[in-house]
Length: 309
Ligand code: GLV
Image (cartoon, rainbow, N blue to C red; front, side, top):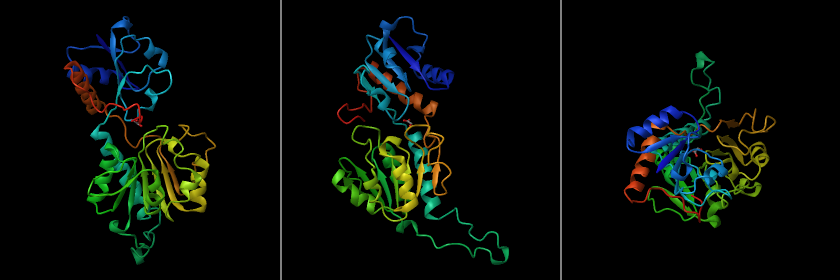
C-alpha cells in the first residue's frame, strides 16, 4: 500500500526527507500515481476533494501544515486527519509574537531622539515594564502554550483564553465565551492563534473589538476568518480602542489591493509568514506518525471532527 506526497513546494526535499525516515515505504509524488486503489495515506498541504475521493482505500490524511480546515470541507472523504504539531513552527510563531508585542509596547516607531546627538537619548519614552504589560493568547493549544512560555519567561503576565480553559499555573486561565469580554478587556496585547472552525469563524465582531483595552495591540497569526469584518478592525485602530494591529493572516488571502489594511501607520501586514512548515522537522514528525500507523498505534495529534481541531 502506498503513500501519496503532495507538498506545496520543495517536492524533492520532502521526498528525500520522507524516504530517509521511511526507506521501506512506497512514496509517490503527486500526481504520479498509477494504482489509485493502493493509496492508503496522503501527506499533503492541500488536495482537490475529487482527487482524494479517487483513492477508495484512503484511511489517513497527514497534514503538512498546522491548520487543517482545508481537510474538513463538505465532500472531503471522512478519513482520519493528523495535524502537524511541529515545535520548530511554534518557536517561529512565538518569535514573531514577541517581536510585534515588544515593538508596540516600547513604541519602536518613535524617533527616540537619535537625531539629536547633543541630547542623546532625550527622546526615550518611558515604556511599561514587561510586568505591567499583560499579554493575552486567544487559543491555548500547542502553539498558544509555546507563545505563553516565551512571554512568561520574560516577565510578562499572560492571560490564556480557550474553550475549556487551562490548568497551566503560569497563566491566568479564561474558559468559554462568557469570559471573552473580560479576557479582551484586561490585555495590553492579544495574540490570536485560534484554528479556523465553525466556532471561531467571525468570533471577533465589531462588538468584540469594542471590548479590547484602550491602546491594545491585536496580533493575528491564526486565521483571517476569526475577524468578522476587516473594516471593523481598521475602524477599531482608527477610532479606538485598539492602538495597533498586526495581521499575518487575512480573509481573503491575499487581501484585495484596495484593502484598508494596507498603508496604515498602525497596522502591519505580513504575508502568512509567522510560522512556516520547515521540511526537515515536519517530515520527521509525519514519518514518525506513518511508522506508528504501520505498527498499529495511533498517530497524533488526530483532529476531533466534533471540535474541528
Ligand atoms: C500555516 O498557516 C499552517 O497551517 O501551517
